[in-house]
Length: 553
Image (cartoon, rainbow, N blue to C red; front, side, top):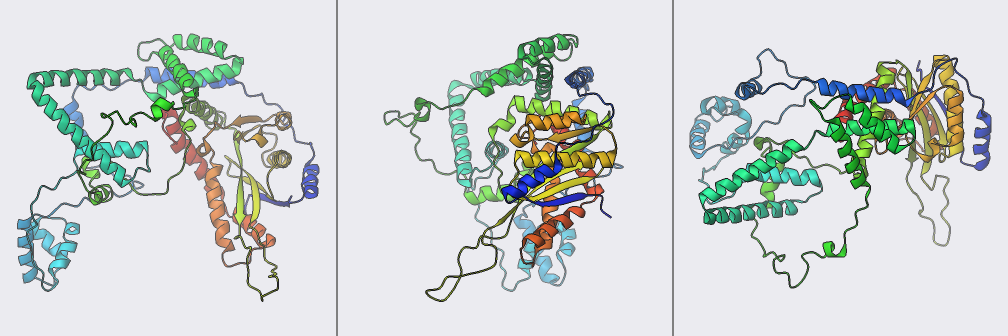
């Protein structure tokens, strides 16, 4: 029997919505005892994380050659991770001499597979399958390929391609061709200038350039340190209610950590400068937008360049493992997901660290029951607005003419339980308040008078004053998710499982309100406690480490 609880309510009309809201009322259970959450604990946790980061020992790099040798030659008793995806085997071109030897073997042994010939020519079978199959065909002739000056992609070409795709994944092959061609044109121009100025001057300039790059790389602190300092500033600012007071307290606290290993005061300054810079709206001026478009500016007019590499070569380099041979990960073609630039701001990432630290303490240290709350929507059916009928008569049908919209307000707990209310229509502040009242009653029945933590996003229907009063009256804790951080809520992953199960149940059935509601209810009850615990474990063990490192989630 499933431990999940689900209710289906029709609030498509105002009368039914009012009846659902009045049914719940304002009576909520209250917990016996329990203290309110104080932001001071979160600030202390962040300060402790900064202290442990400062005390961390950096391994000495006294013998880099030995370290590289150990990395290149893993121990024989080490076992590969079973969850690691299999690596793609690279294709090695076969020389003309090997092809001639292979053709003689194939004619002498036409019935043998490719593995038989691989032992004679010392080449992997997957490199010979297509070639051996072609040689077995009647009339095959081995023709020597014309050895022209065919350009190949170098390691530097792979680097500029990877940089371009990481900056903008929707870069087309034509744009990549222009980027590679410009790189080679600039390289030839630089080589000519270096030859004219002399080898000594060129080597000195290279040394100065490399030294400047090394200094810049050394001056850039790790992103995780800057964001951790920003999380402490935000926690103390929330505690004091004044930003200037919070910054002063932060500098006072980090001064006690010392500057032997990490200068945390400089990290605070760097975070404040970055946050102020990211708040400024960026509007390109007319001069910047028209730069290089003037008719008299001959320096900005580029002469048409002959493409250095073909589009097919770039495509094969990306797909067939050529980029992997240069030490980069392969690039696959997939559906893009639009993401706002605001989600990568320093303030947002620092808020993620603060919230992740708080939730991690609730689960791992305080052992509280955390309730993850969110809502999702179903739009089921297809739009039907035209049909056939005799000429001069209207077309009538009893099927739904528009797509039916359902909303599910759901909650999952760290104990593996789930609760949901499915409504027909949209979710308003009153509907969400009624859902919270039902949720608190269900939580009281399932977990007794234990104090819980309610985790939800910053949607407008989640933040009314009356809703906070209800939760405070029940002595529970409310934690709001940082903006642009849906991946930190494990219930988002449960929605995918739930909808997939519901869609499978609706295949081949007539879409009515009863069948749709029944499929949603039955699919929700099929979600097990192990599924819920695994989703929460995935967020804690996989997503939160990325948050603490300042990576993209």
